[in-house]
Image 1 (cartoon, rainbow, N blue to C red):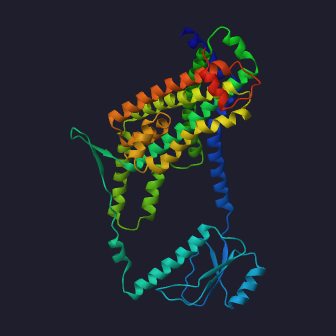
Image 2: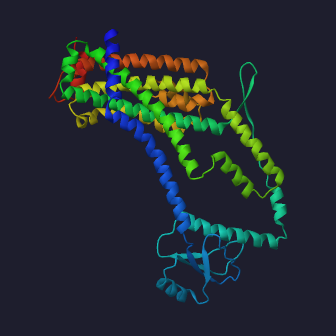
Length: 439
């Protein structure tokens, strides 16, 4: 155990003191705020320099009322053929042809452009006609807008979780969905990234013959365990630094450009666009306060502990397999044939996160995926916010630990032979032979 601890210290200090670690730890968090700042700056400059597109229109219906909030509409008094010729010689965006149409079934409206228009362009013009046709139908039926507005009713369902003891607790499915999605995606990214680092590090040491010197004083299994745990601690340290730096710098960049926090933006948008009634607007701050309260009432300690446990458990399982692959090959190119079978459970759990787990976190498929050790790190993080029965969580954790012990044992048997081999053409038959070989 003392030798494993020494290897953990060596791996941790060796990685942390490298320039590559310092560069990645400091500059990666700078990239995201820099990208956000650049995009915000470009958007602001585009808004300053943007000009409204010009659309010529031929209105045979005689009822089109141009909406100039988005485009500059210019009426063309000639025929459609003449309009096409004139448009072809211009540099304007489009030509809109409006034939006579029935309000019940408007057809034949055509937009001519020199380039394929975007969905926003087509959708914007369609909304103009939909609004105008709706107003004309209302006039025909003698219906006032106030009457239509009074028919609109917003329904908000409160969700309350009842515990076995009858205790009531407010919940929000949207917030829980976001936590599950973020937790699952982060789990997938970090397990894959740091697991691949294990494999790369072992290949480098194997090709540089450093490992032969180390193995002369420690057992290969001890070396593998120390390397896995040492790099896990490096990953956790780097992850915490990234979270702190990225959140701080991102809010700083948004503040520099004068962008309000999301909550304030949402409230301003509601007050600007809500045309229903003053009473409805007054209810929105209460909704925001309720949502903030629901976020604050979430068991963040329980969620964070689960994330760390499943991150470490999932990382240790896959790190052992990546280590076995790294010990068996001499270059990353040779490792590709063994990488795909290892990553299949990760891909299954990642795709199932969106197909099954977040849609039905308490379904049979979601439960089994969160219990099987190779898929539980991602699947359980997708379910954890929705509430997982204690027996399922306990079973999942026990099996995850058992899975780590099993994969470490299997990988160790391959590692003890493969780490000292070089120049050998490796396939699955050779790996099976190394596994069965008596030490």
